[in-house]
Image 1 (cartoon, rainbow, N blue to C red):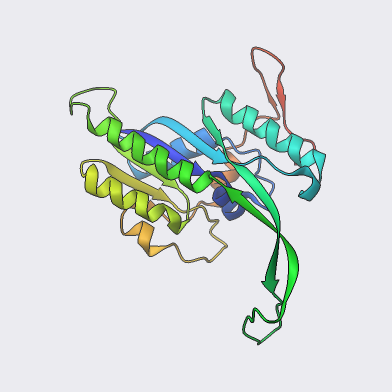
Image 2: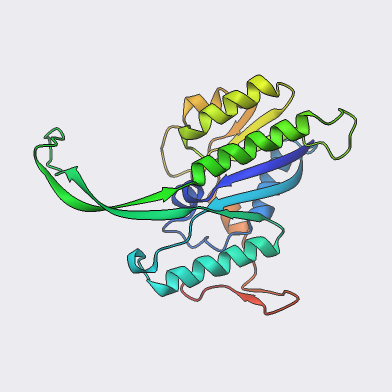
Length: 230
């Protein structure tokens, strides 16, 4: 069963990779591994990865963080993964001051810098729905037909898109991978799981460690080198 996979990069990073040594992840091989375990007949046709460029001035390692992200995106593209970029918006805002045991109160607020990732959710939803519509128009015996949408995200903002796919393309199978390591205990969102034909609620640490890019990736041009601080 040909599968198109859509990865919410921000959700994926903070659910699985942040504060780990596994950031140099070979995403294609990991997804192929999980699909095969779920059902050996599942065939990964394409992956689309959605993220936004780092703002170096706000990143923990500044320019080095920006360079590492660009290097990783180059590695993803080299493994035949499409990357769609959104953007970050930084603006002045006000928010209630946090005090232990006290409810949030707008009358007791302070100025903050609000950093938001923009366009990614919309991009994921539109690309999933567009793919489902296009593939739904193909004949059932068309060998190129994608018959499964796989979403890697725990963001409930994806729920409306999956609902529309269910309604408008009822023959399209939906899979869900919740980006969480087994030692973390967030509850997978029921609104997504209820719409999926199958779901994977954790990714094991051994699976992350076993599916890493080599430190040096050969290309037709300049090789891709793993960032040193990773």
